[in-house]
Length: 271
Image 1 (cartoon, rainbow, N blue to C red):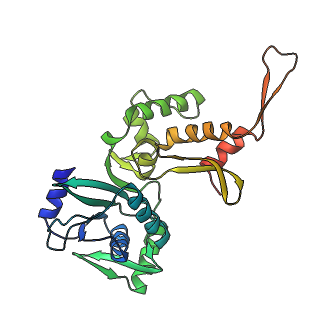
Image 2 (spheres, rainbow, N blue to C red; image 1 turned 90 degrees about the vertical axis):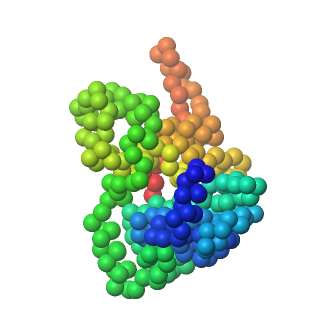
Image 3 (cartoon, one colour; image 1 turned 135 degrees about the vertical axis):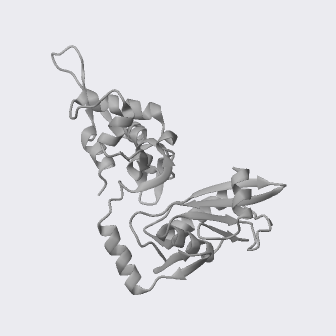
């Protein structure tokens, strides 16, 4: 990771990199610009000329920055943020993916990356971005991660479950299955592949509320969706009541407070 950072600094600011000494609105504008172009990296604690100055940051500060990015951008962005120690100083790396559905705004204004600068997008280009996005699918958008970076054990488990349901005919080669189902395209991972089987930076946040502003229990699940849904269901079952119905059959019948298939469907297709 440190070598990657040093390479970015050595190459100076350009189309896919920007340096800032401190976090602020200009950082969020850069994040917005990268998401509207081809993605990029913002390094905080580095001056414009590439001098490493360091920045005061810890897990709590990163959490605060994440919330500010989320609250300022629309659609809300959740870039990967890494703390990096270098010669007794701290640098923060913010990795921004190109966003499939454009344009993304920062406080209602739209920015694009041109060279090493962030530029306000004029109205005609905003309309053009929107029109291009209408013809694209969020799930089918190609990402930087390769198929080899996906978790093979989760892919295998997923397709075994699909095979057991017998809905589609699959082969024993999961790479072929990924292509057949459209989860990968020409050997490249899509956003759907990353969400289902990869290390993405989104999550499912579930809470049990005693009152509108009182949370009894909550959990943030940051796992590939193929396994995250099961984790979410485990948390939900822990927080709803279960009764048993006894009939003439040998096994008792479970009766949950809410129908589990309905809850699972809501997780998969939120309203």
